[in-house]
Amino acid sequence: MNTSRTASAAHVAKRTNVRYAILLLIFLITTFNYADRATLSVTGSAMRDEFGLDAIRMGYIFSAFSWAYVLSQLPAGWLLDRFGARRVYAASIFLWSVFTLLQSSIGLLGSAAAAITGLFVLRFLMGAAESPAFPANAKVVASWFPTHERGTASAIFNAAQYFAAVVFTPLMAWLTHAFGWHMVYLVMGVTGLLLALTWLKVMKNPADHPRVSRAELDYIQQGGGVANTASQATVPASRPPQDIAHAGGWSLVRQLLTNRMLLGVYLAQYCINVLTYFFLTWFPIYLVQARGMTILHAGLVASLPAICGFSGGVLGGVLSDGLIRRGYSLTLARKLPIVGGMLLSVSIIGCNYVSTDWVVVALMSLAFFGKGIGALGWAVVADTSPKQALGLSGAIFNMFGNVAGIVTPIVIGYLVAKTGSFNGALVFVGLNALLTVFSYLVIVKDIKRVELRA
Image (cartoon, rainbow, N blue to C red):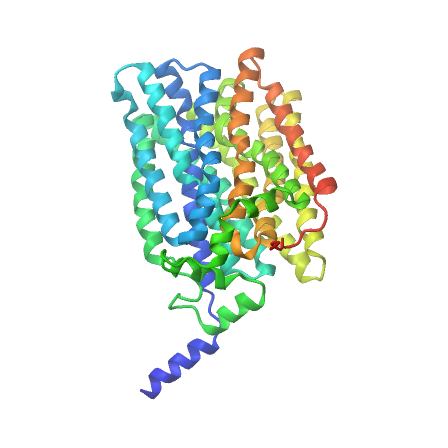
């Protein structure tokens, strides 16, 4: 009995690090999230040949995901604040994995037209299913991490998009080359279903997690972590707390949409995501069509900028949090990596003026390294969102950002179709990097948490 009490007392006194295990889990889930989004970019060349797709139709199919993803953000944010990240995220992972799995069978629909329609519908449904993912990530990070660790934590889960490209783009390219494009969707769909079960088993709120010591919980809360909001998920649906009811109202939406700082952050996220969606949709096709690479070679080459993006993403978060620990303001600590990183991303335009493949890859790698450093938007959201509505605030931010997923593939599709070249597309991407710099330097003033008005 005394031994048990001693062990319990030691657990309370010692500061555990369960938050890092939670971060690892959302990193893995986000990796699969982006890998599922990118399946079509890898299999797209093979599917274009099989179903006779031109660049414009391909652009619209690429955009199908983002139409639903954007339209579903506000409902997803309300669901997260109403029911909590554990249940909503589990349902999200399960559903997007089912829709990924079903894409393997579109060839069974009979005609090319039916297959194209089926692919568009399934990509649309997958976008709706994935809509809670990033707001849930931001909600979990805001709950589990103090302010001075939040930039690194947000950068790590956001860098999963590059890690997905490093690991899964070559893997999916090999599966397409060896077994056909259908196998990509089968493997990714089944793996995602297993991941949904893992999330349900492992994820808990900070105050409820059996392995979290009192010292770690105090460390999170005293450092600015919003650990108490996580418990909202345990409140019975018949008795929602007042702050959740208020968070679901249009008055809060209006307050967020009329805040100058947040509008600048929203615009910047849209521009940053133009780079993201170029990489997720057209980049492998650019390597095949404009640079004459095979699908397998393009899959391998695409991993190099992704490695640089991942490295830049982690470095940006570490740099930002390091500035905070050294006493610099939150505003400077967040803006400096964002502005510097996006200026580096403008180098993508230089690909139009070189012909050697290794120089093209080097410029792309530099651009995505800079984009990784500057991708601190989710840390800014965790820093600025009202405590009562972390899910809804993150959803609005994500909705604006992912309008780029609608615009980018369609614009690039038209530019390629009309000019027969990717030159205009790369200029379009680079100019959006410059607009990000303008947003943070001119529109966004001090970065601070928004307080709700009564």
